[in-house]
Image (tube, rainbow, N blue to C red; front, top):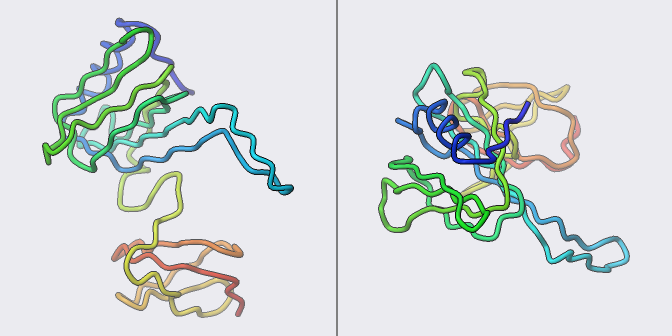
Length: 186
């Protein structure tokens, strides 16, 4: 269940609940626009409001993983980094989340109409992504396909079973290599 942040008391309670993101980093960032192009190639822009999901992992027993959803974002500036000095405020009835980046080249910031969050347990920590397919970077080649939906990582030899999908990016849980599966049939 999500908890909405509606006022300054909610902000303070949220930051306290997540220990002010001490020893935290952004694990996932995904955005989705509500506009689309249909099968007849007609565009439905709806002024294209977008929503953003942020997954933050931290070294904390109290809040090891936090999912934050920003609704109707109007600004997104991002740099992957460790979260330093988080700030969450209301400005002109919009919520603004920013933090000092450990790289310090930009100030990551999300401005949105509203924000909701939920604390997730330790079982979602780790290398694997929570909501999105792994992104194929570098050589995203097929793994060695065995049989009955089993594959072998060509980098480290790890073997695992995958869901029977037409197209998917899968990630080795041992070494983190990302593979692209397309119509794999054994």
